[in-house]
Length: 276
Image 1 (tube, rainbow, N blue to C red):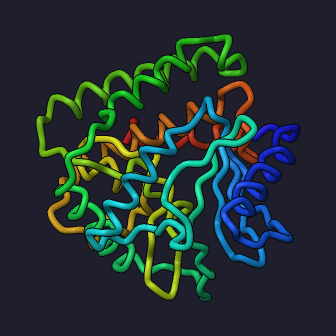
Image 2: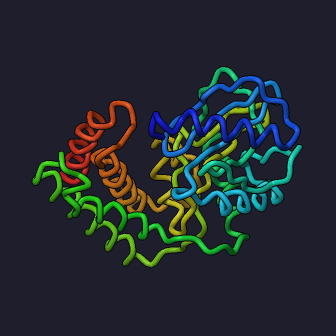
Image 3: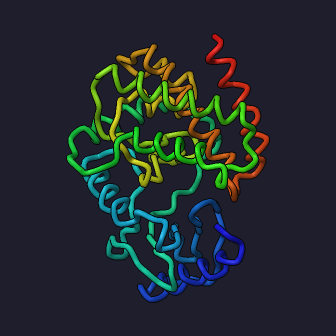
């Protein structure tokens, strides 16, 4: 989030919680990306704040409720207030349960795979309108094609990303395998280690596609413990996902720390994977 907006976003979260009779005297910023994640104290609530124009908060709240009700390993909404989206000062605010991190935080690949399998099992029972994973691939393709939005990307690298995104999107689509509702980005940054086990967060990236697309976001060892994986499809999904996240790193205004350095490293990894 832009530095100029952080102070307003924090104020929006504090005033929203206070209006719901939650006591807020202090705020700890836990994560700052396209949205702000805050721990509100002493009420001990997790607040997620995003600009009104760039959010799908209502979808995320409804989906989290339904998944939690069916026993899926997802973070729960704050139980002391009505589960809904609050709008204040140009921001949307959602309030969630705060989970104290468990130490040590290392997650075994088997536990990770088991939690993801349980999430997928619950998601298969839901019928909700979501984008297809290829819609997200297309967003990356449009970024690569737009030199104004990715001005620092060298032409050879632009061609590499464009070709990789286009060809793997086609190859994976032509496989015609089973598809279902997915998390969309179940990487380690979206997994909480809690006393209740592993819980997935950040459901705004949900899409439809093969489970291998989700597995491609997780550490490689996780797929070894997930049943019925199509290894060829997983390999293609891994390269596709790598091309997508590499593209985000070259977007003008990308705020990920060391993002450009990562973008260069990942371009080398894509070339090595394609050569292999």
